[in-house]
Figure 1 (tube, helix red, strand yellow):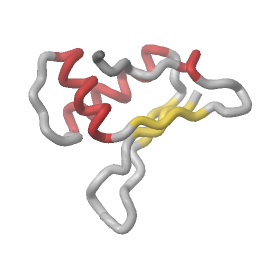
Figure 2 (cartoon, rainbow, N blue to C red):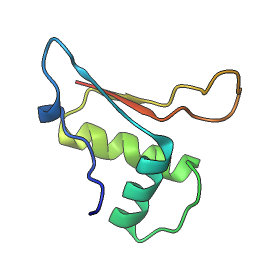
Figure 3 (cartoon, helix red, strand yellow):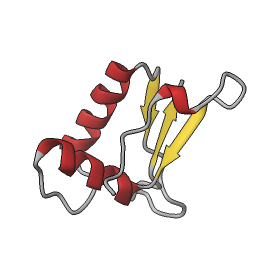
Figure 4 (cartoon, rainbow, N blue to C red):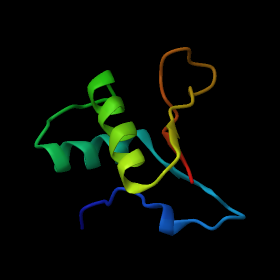
Length: 79
């Protein structure tokens, strides 16, 4: 079963944040764009943010995995 891009309808006003792993978001972006990326790069970060805003999220953030200064810990979507 293919993973789905999160939508704001999945969260409530009280719990207004959704999180997806880096691996899931790379897979979703690849599936939706016929890409073959193996990691979260600038191209798919930009696409994820644009797609999230288009779906009604107010923002999408890529927090760093502690203690890394470069690896993302996934994507946080804010309603």
